[in-house]
Structures are given as structure tokens and as C-alpha cells.
Image (cartoon, rainbow, N blue to C red; front, side, top):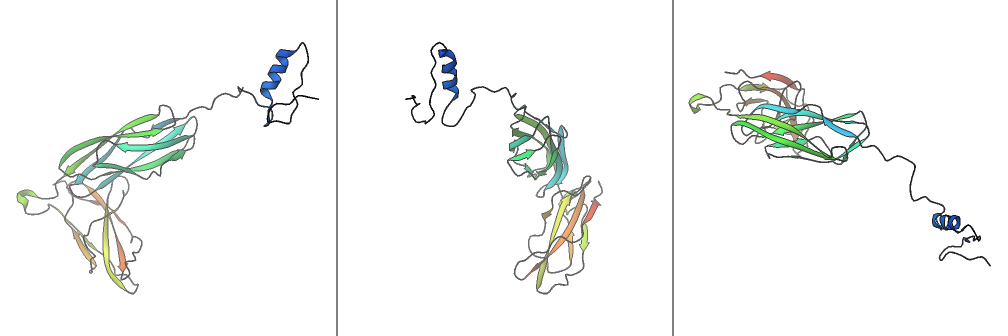
Amino acid sequence: MPETVAGCSKPVLKLVGVLLLVAGLTFLSGCQGVSAKGSDTPGQQSGTLAFGASKVDVGNVAVGSSGTASGSLTASGANVTVTAATTSNSAFTIGGLSLPATISDGQSVPFTITFSPAVTGAASATLTVTSDGQPSTITESLTGTGTSASGGGGSGSNHSVALSWNPSTSSGISGYNIYRANYTSSCGTFSKINGSLDANTVYTDSNVADGSSYCYATTAVDTSNGESSYSNVVSNVQIPAQ
């Protein structure tokens, strides 16, 4: 009768004089079939992750409002999975990445940096991104400047932006929201700037920073609090430096 390995129905063949060969076959055989302890396949190559630039500068942003700028991450050599992204200063936040995010070899993904200054003056932070690439962490510098929206002598803003729009043709409209974004080479992330619904079709934005550029859009809100998509966007509204 053939001998069997405990738990398996497969017989183990024994031949006198070739015990080393038998031992090797016994090690490689089992209920799940033949397997090798090692592999001739080279280990999977780790990709490299890099920022599109060494620094993201949000620029001038009025205290109490938010400005945005864009950045990017690029994978090379192999796919890279980003698992975490943090900043060292709470005035700067990262958006646009749903983590974990896998970036294909040779591809880039964008992200946004939002700067929300609480005080005037220059601010900076370090963005740290963790991934399964090599090296496992990379960093990028973030900068921005908080500016005062008030003019000399505390009498109000140096400048303001007057907006007007056509009323919505939908029924049951209770008011409008006004949104603003910082403009660099394109519009950044929009943020609502009115504290309550505007029942009129005009709005004056006095909380602007000298030397900055903005984009504006409005939405209509009905009596059930349903909000429309953005109106046409007015972009690159330039505020004089003085």
C-alpha cells in the first residue's frame, strides 16, 4: 500500500538511493498542487512620485476669505498609490485628491491648495505626500500672503466690485448666492461670499485685496433650498494695486 501525507490523498513515492530527490519532491508537493518557495520573477519595480513644481504660491488673499492655486503629482517608472497628504499649517488645505489615489505610470493628477489667512502677512507651509513610491514621502513648499481689505484710515475698502445679473426664469426663486474665486492663470475654487440669500440681482463685493484678480458667479435658490448650477463666470476681474 502506498504511504500518504497527512491530510492529503496524494501518495508520496519513495525510492532507495534517491532520498534527496524524494525530499525535494515531497517539499514541493501538497494538497494545493506544486509550488516553489522562491521565484525567478524579478520584484515589482517601485514607481517615483514627483510634484509638478517645487512650490505652490497662492498669492495675495484678503483676511477672512480664501484663495486657491493648482498643483500636480506625476508618477514615473510604475504606478504609484498616494495614501496621505498633509500640510504643516492649517491655513493651507489640499483638495482635489480622493485618497487613496493611484496614479498610472507617466500620468499626472491635479490638486488644489486653498489658503485661508486669519492674519495679514506672508505665510508658508510644507505639503507632505506619502505613497508606495520611492521615496515614500515627498514635500513641496506652499506660500501665500494675507492682506487687509480695508483702506487707509479704516474708512472702508480701497476698491470694490459691483455685480449684477439677470433674474432666473424659474418659478419659486427665493434669492441668489454669490461665489468668488481667486484667479491666477484660471479660476480657482469658488467660495460663497454672501452671508444670506440676496433677494436682489445686484451685489457689491467690498472684501477684495489690492492687486488681486478674481472670478465671480451666481446661483439661484428656490423655496425648497434647491440651488442651481453656476451662472456664466466673469473671470479675471483685476483689482488695482493702489
